[in-house]
Length: 303
Image (tube, rainbow, N blue to C red; front, side, top):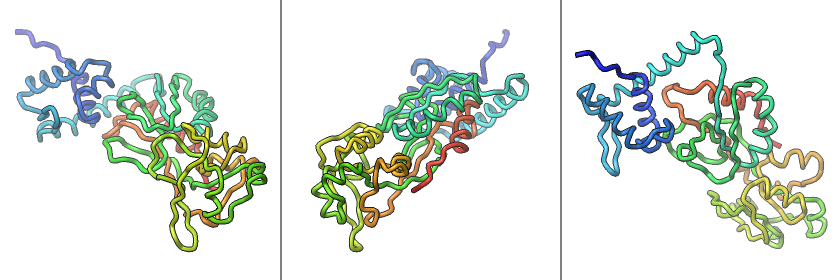
């Protein structure tokens, strides 16, 4: 009987995606397949190899020792295959659609201004950019890279640190002339404190006064969905806003915004990371190109 030809590299790639993304449904979305097709593919692979690779139930998903060995070797094989194709091809350049999700401040201050330079370097790449301050599920949204500020939750995703920024309270000169410049956290209570209407890790503005930590609630007459909207409200003279330093540094340099209560600034910072899927070094060239570009060109700095 003639042997049936099997697309072994295709099977292996789907299997690796199942493990890296933590399930059939996520792998199906990434591979443009149905969950049923992915499940059947893994079952056929197990049948052909004569061993169980994954123990799964409605609530659990666990690799067997044989599955772990196949995954580890599979990642290396796929990486070697991609490298071999790049070396053999005359067009070893990043190409294809690159889906990027970023928080709004980073998007406005870095990603959008730098996009023309990135695309000039890599003309075969198409950027698909979404800006939101909501923390998205990178797998659900099928994003290649997500830029996040603040602490990272434990996950199977990889992260590349892009920088660290201080947090500062700022106000427009006109607003401070009308309402006065607060000298203590207590005086800040009389001011309009602009807040965000999305979930944050902190319930208010942290300050340090007379060697004591103070958490000031945010109870202004306006809220906004992202950090850039808060910046514009502050620029308009509506109230005070607490922003990442990189957002306000140009405004402070030109006098459009002034720092407030820097003597009470506790010095807390937010780290900024580019988060992506790519365990085992198996990473599309277009994703690697963007990560390297951001690491090279993004200067979050401090003031």
